[in-house]
Image (tube, rainbow, N blue to C red; front, side):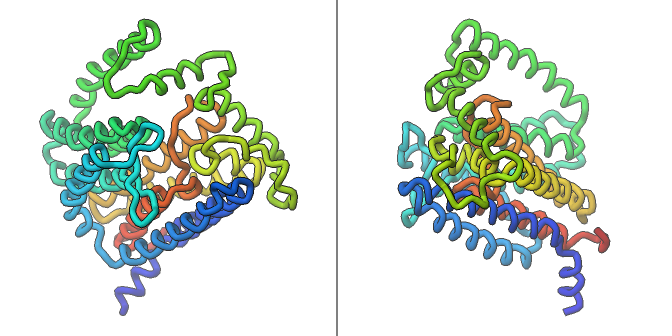
Amino acid sequence: MNELKVKYKKFDVIIFIVMILLTCCGLYCIRQVGILNDAKAGLFSKQLMGAAIGFGLIFVMLFIDYRFICKMSLLMYLGIILILAYLLVFGNSLNNVKRWIIIAGIQFQPSELTKVVIILFLAFLCNHFKERLHKFYVFFILCLVTALPAVLIILEPHLSSAMAIFFIFCIMVYASGISYKVIGIVLAVSIPTVAALIISVTMFNLKLPFVETYQIERILSFMSTDESEDMTGKYQQNQAITAIASGGLHGKMISDDNSDRLYKSIYANESDFIFSVVGEEFGFIGTGIILIFYLTLVIRSIIIGTRAPDNMGKLICIGVAALFMFQIFINVGVATSILPNTGLSLPFISYGVTSLVSSMLAVGLVLNIGLRCNDKTF
């Protein structure tokens, strides 16, 4: 009983409250989208169910030591690889992509769960090889482990999720204390290679394997000064900017008239372009507060990581912080036309049961580690 009281005092209430507030904001935005579009009216109830599942899993996870969860990460990794492979062969094709498995009428997206599994398995491996991180073969093993699910996700195709996994890999491997000699060799090879590929694609129309034509067109559309009327081009982003700007300082949340919402005509306004709904509903002030919530979530994850009882816990927290940083930056950047148009969910706010549950599992891992920190003061 005394041990439970000590752990309870270490529970990071700030992260938990921030997660609840962000989830509530997401539920409100999805409900608004459903009100304006009858075809999306059922999304709210599914997202609410996802939130309930996520909270239940967090509650269970808090009673399981994260070190035991990491020991099971190899089985989780093999399981997610099998699921991704199954998806490519037997998965349901929607708009020429295979990203979802339908379970009990709900679309399950394995690529979202893959991000959390990769964080756990990389933390386990980096901790296992912590005395040999200066060896190049260890870096090769880490690359291979990360590349396998990333390639399977690219084949769906879902390039943005694969990029998120690559970003997580870079941050976690660097934080693990890998040798600068290995980093130098990798950069010396990768930078000229990437530069040559970019030049070949943009200037000589080179066809790259695993890269779809529409993905290249989105980048070219972003770089162009012309406003493409293509729904996947820059036009979509311009519409999102207009909707965000129309929210003004205070937003339209207090308005009873839903007919003036500009985001209602934006494609994927419940997921990839949910930030246009956030901007118009909550305005500049509300949007700023939500971004502060995200910043708090990332900073608190890093703080807990620095106080983790071992290297594995530290790396998990850093991996979770990297995941949130990347997805927030990409989603907001796309909606505000800072980045080329690509599909990536905004944690806790975008519609997607798998995305929401995966984000909540990531927070659950951080809370789990926080409960087992040796430092009682936060």
